[in-house]
Image 1: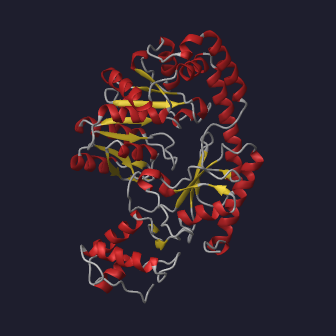
Image 2: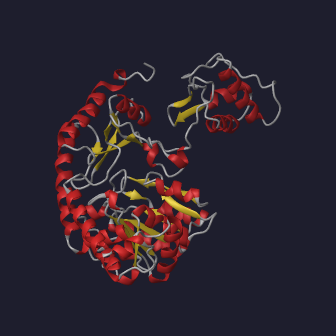
Image 3: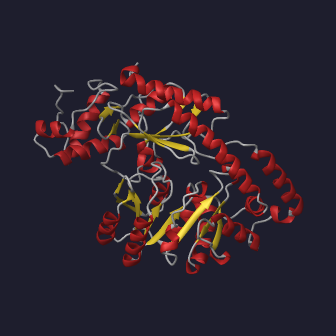
Amino acid sequence: MTNWLPDLTASTGPLYQRLADSIEAGIDQGVIGAGTKLPPQRDLAYDIGATVGTVGRAYQLLRERGLVSGEVGRGTYVLGQHADGAKPEAPDVSVEGTRTVDAPQDKLRFDSTAAPDVGQGTIVADVLSRTAQDHPHEISSYTRDFPTRWYEAGARWLSRNSLRPAVDSIVPTLGTHAAVMAAIAALTTPGDYVAFEHLTYSQISRSAGLIGRRTALVASDDEGLDPEDFERVCAQKHPRMIFLMPTAKNPTLVTLSAARREAIAGIAREYNVVLVEDDLYGNLTDDPTPLLAEFAPERTIVASGLSKSVAAGVRGGWLSCPPAYRHRIRVAHKMMTGGMPFLLAEVNARLVLSGQAGEIRKRSIAEISARIAIVRETLAGFAFKSHDKVPFVWLTLPDPWLSGTFKNACLEHGVLIDDEDEFKAGRSEQVFHGVRFGVSQPRQRGDVANGVSVLRRLLDEGRAGYDSFS
């Protein structure tokens, strides 16, 4: 592409649009082939006498048209076209992420962190059967009244360290994601900012965007969210809410110190920001750090569920919130999801109150620990973060690997992992050169060992062992 210059005289309109049209014409005519790297924005801006911003807008327009893809630090590349001549549809990463929705069945699933199979299917089947026998009428109808035991189960499951939620603070939900989205829908309005770290469980920020909320990004460092930057964002953008994973954050496994939690609580109080504390992975750990809710109980919503420790398929979740928020969040959850199905809510409550959920969690943690031990042995010598009881690993890639390139290399070798873009809450210029892979979904530990061996081999070989255009 170094000798190619666009023809900007063939059309009229804004310069960025004419530039995008010229590049599109070059692609259609075969002058710019699939896989071609477009010129760096600064170089092309100099060659055509435009600003870097103009070229950036043109490249973004090409991405929206499904003609190119790009990765920070790697460049912008022309995508191939379908055989019928139709242009490919490039996914909107801000909405869809980079994960394959319909994953190939012949690949090893290292892109999931659901609870491992430790025989819970038999237990759940028994509870399902007894629930159906005991409550046939409730199952056949809509759920309008929630029995007290559903709230008691949530209060028990969310209790950790010194936090003991009151029963009247609980809202049963269809999983942790639904709990957080109900809180966002209830306590913010379209156009409001919701703050997120640059790397986090980004499906919340994408979902919030779909209902009209805007994302404000807050910087983090090796110790987690930076309180000073949080205060800057609060002063400049006035977010109504911030989403946090203070313990074993997804994907970096960072745990906030008590001092930082206290500082964040103080800033939130000063700027009247609601704190949403996702404790889904924290629930797996024995970390003694007080929960964020202990520092700011009047403005903190704690959400967790059964997906990572018991069974993702039962969609069990609860949140605890200040009493003034409870009714609004419960109504919002019904509006967002269609309401709680009696069968699932009752099964989840029985699992928790009987102690069976706690026993399954112990078995899940033991299995996760055994699999993490395999990772540590196999990847010894490389930079990665792991936790004995958390089912994923954050791997820092050695030079010259890029996150997206490594993900594609793993895919070609039969292993599905997640690149860093999957966890970016918004358009961030930060590059982390990391990937996350989970160890809980393969059926056997031997499958985990085989998959991690693939990663090790690719790391040892470097990019010379992978040709993206082969």
